[in-house]
Image 1: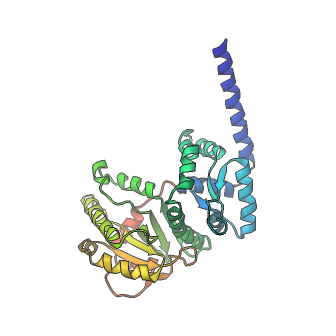
Image 2: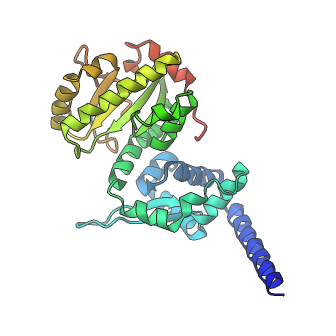
Image 3: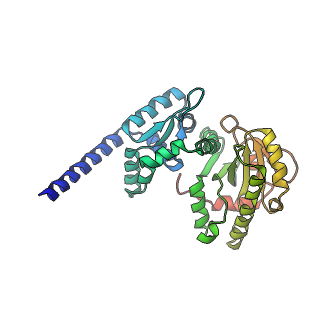
Length: 313
């Protein structure tokens, strides 16, 4: 009898959960569903970032995001700041995981995202600011694309970038020694495309440590060449001109840099769009060019841009 009661209780609980999902789904717009999936794919996005991606003004964004949080499709938190208050940071909520699971026909796919311990760890992570900054790089491109001034055809996170390289038939043993860029993207403009890997630098690493990363990127280039694949251009985004200048000297001094396509900039992507004329090749003319124009000098990148597909966005 006890086991039958327990089974009946679980059945009632499952029915109640399904009903909650159905009620939430009935209140969601296409834009809401886009927001939920975008947050899920990129783990954490702020109010301002979601506004840039999907809204015309922040008042409307705040109101709608508040609704989504109250529904349980999103969760949110504010990191502690010694001075002032941080913006809301949005995570995937339990109902959001259930909705995406139903859409993807995989009920378990998104459950790890909403594990309380994992989300608390993210809130307290020292990498949170770095993740938010790297996301701003892609959000800024996405916002420009939303206005019709280009297209962000691919936006892969650090973990999805590793999956992409694995999908190129790179062995798991080789992956262990390969780099971990902060993202992989394909930007399209003026009928052209450019594929890139992003290193978003907050200034916390010593310059020698930064330059040593080129060794792993050089190994990536060697591995990809075995499969007749061209390694994407490597973009270093620095937050200050001084950091960029000293880093460029350290990167240029590495012999590994000679076999790689590298460009740098010093911008805050929340303020300045990375698509603009802000990029300077590490080796070359010494003049700043647009992101899309970096590919003009490296024709091989066009082929890779067409080959990169994004199964996540």
